Image (cartoon, rainbow, N blue to C red; front, side, top):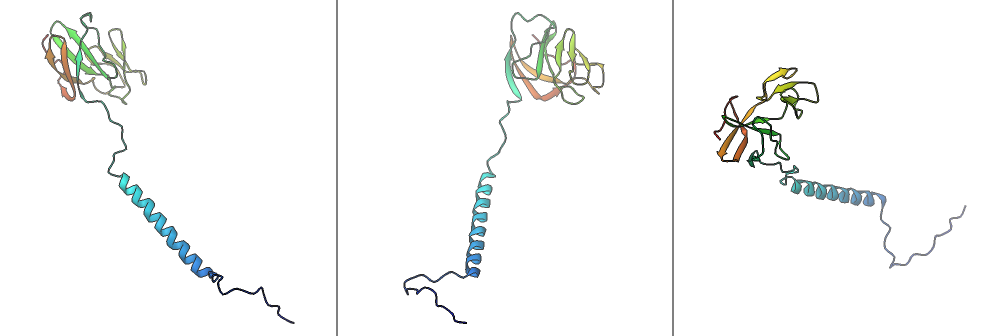
Length: 161
């Protein structure tokens, strides 16, 4: 059996890379890429990935044509404002059962999710809601009011007209 020599190699040809060297370099590059990607992820952490929500304290002007006892719901809010002979007050429109948004229904509010009914003052007429709709703090006068959704006040608290 005779061995035939391969093609002649020039001394200028690069040495072939051994397999172990290639695998070692590939692992170093993979580690470097993983480190770089984790660094990019860490740099994004300080920036909050949440959407800004509207302020819990907002100004509202009641329409002059608003009848006494009728709810006024400002656009984009879950609050109903009422005006009567004793003053102005604001109620939450978030059902106390599971947090659905209640809808105005004649003399009160209905929860479309589970059937709770509330009176115009927020008290529960029909369950499963466990408690009345909360009242919010209202300040101001002469048609221009500030409602603070973070400040819950006792039921019956009104600002004078």
